[in-house]
Length: 446
Image (cartoon, rainbow, N blue to C red; front, side, top):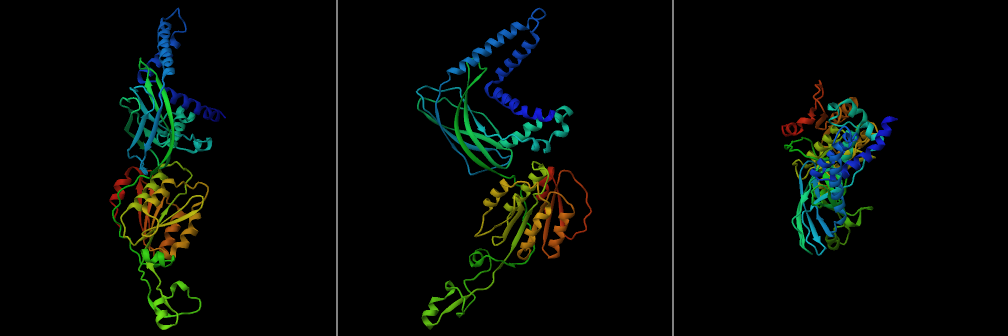
């Protein structure tokens, strides 16, 4: 009950802290701290002279805040965002600002405002902050640092203030701004705030321009060497158009007489005109290589670093070099089971990365939910790459199922800490550790 009560006060405390940091300059925060301290120690005016300092600082803050009421500007603003960003990679983009006023505007800074989605109480209790083990028992019990961490994840990016050059009346400038994405998925930019300090340099007057836009952040990716996965070509359903794009298709294998039920589009009209009898084109079955990329989404911790690492590893294999005639079939379970093919003539790499940017953990279904999807595709699979969050009996059963069909495998298990495990499977199992992902993936050999 106490924790729930504290939880519902976090939003007020967070908003107050955000407002103070946004409006007060560094010097203003120092004055504000002195004002609060002087107020505490100056209660007894007979024992201390701190009340005089309190009065002085209160006066300074009053006039600094009063001056913000006279801040009058009007700007027209336009962003130029790229199509994608990538987790932990700084993004530079341009903002065009037009001064609609007849006054010179100077000493301004501009900052992006991003939509926040504070966590609900259930998510708050289930989440594990990365620094939780290093915090004291009070912070862990109350949980405000964890709440701030979850809220910052929803924000999705670190932002930097940008100082603006002097804006002349009716003038237009273009400035470079920068942000660093913290997570994959969509970042929702809501507005831009323009700040100008008062003459004392204590308090910022703020002018905000609403400008809602979204930016898709792709998962972090690591270099992956070419892995010569073995595997024979398999017959693929999909018709002539698919086969002609990615398989061993020819336009036709031979000509033969028309039989009842043959589609009209297969008629060879030149032969029909020459012989006076319907002749049709006979096509051969099409065979090509199809690799499965199986992403394990089953976890009880949707914000875990392990799940994010698994998505990054999957994205790395999506971007890895492969033969242009090889299909990649991304398989995972979210609200339902998905199997998305990529290759020449089908979805492209960017489309798979967009899907991985938004994939969510499956917290309400067992791992066995993915088994029917994989069994359905086994007849057309030439090889498979499995990325697991655990190494338990269910996942081992999946590996044994694929091996029983002589499907070449690469299996990756994401671990927070090294856990030596004795394996007796024919497949080569790679245990990847969170702090060594880049090095381990770069050293892969099949």
